[in-house]
Length: 254
Ligand SMILES: [Zn+2]
Ligand SMILES: [Zn+2]
Image 1 (spheres, rainbow, N blue to C red):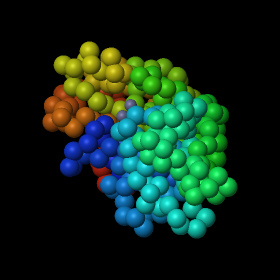
Image 2: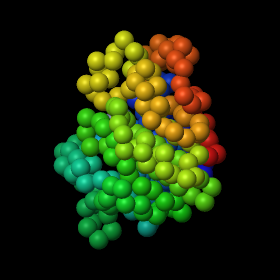
Image 3: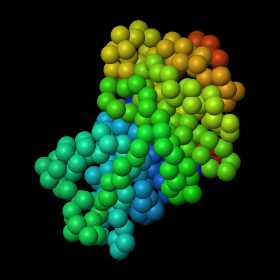
């Protein structure tokens, strides 16, 4: 399974793009920076976007992705999301106020955008992959994803504070090959991390103690203002797994 890291950060700066992955060249997982990372031609190969939650650092490029690909024949873009995320997209983004309602443009029969509901914990198949949404603990309803093909399963936790179910699921997933987990704030900002339901390096070490599998762990979502501090703390923290920062623009073959 090919994961291209379009954006690996939890914020935006000239060198840090917001969270997005492109899986096997055609399925996007989160959409913080698709249009900043891909050419228009590459954007046209994406027909589906799976969203983990409604926060802007995971959704910001959707309006421009649809604008860039709109008008191509047979090119309805499908967004897959859990009910609360669907509600936010319809009421706060594609509401003809923040952005046009592309679920009715050019017409109801053949819209530029279709939003499909995902049921948590219920596996579904798309683009030759099997996906399962697993609830995690964040300030808005958020789901991590198990993404599986014949070669193995990757777990993307999405944004989360201390949580439980996603680790239990990981521990009983037979063919788990990699885990991608968030890290947002340095240790001195533990209170902020607790309130915003994110992780510091110390909190991450506690979370990874719940993962009883010998798999590589990759980190995403470092907040741009604290990157140097976070990297120094990572180097000084001992983790129960091999942990490394996900490299933006690299493609991983899991
Ligand atoms: Zn985020
Ligand atoms: Zn978030």
